[in-house]
Amino acid sequence: ANHSFMPIVVESTPLANFENWSSLLSSQSL
Image (cartoon, rainbow, N blue to C red):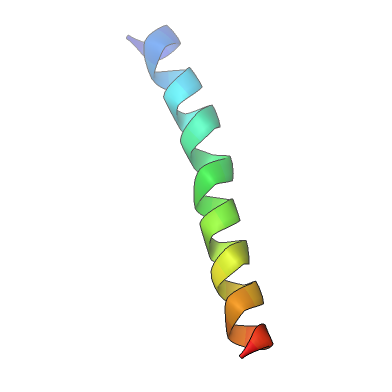
């Protein structure tokens, strides 16, 4: 269970960071 769960966390975390970074970049551009 943990072995299958970890890759999901590893993949979803950078995605969340990327979305936050994009939102921050967009707000600064405006």
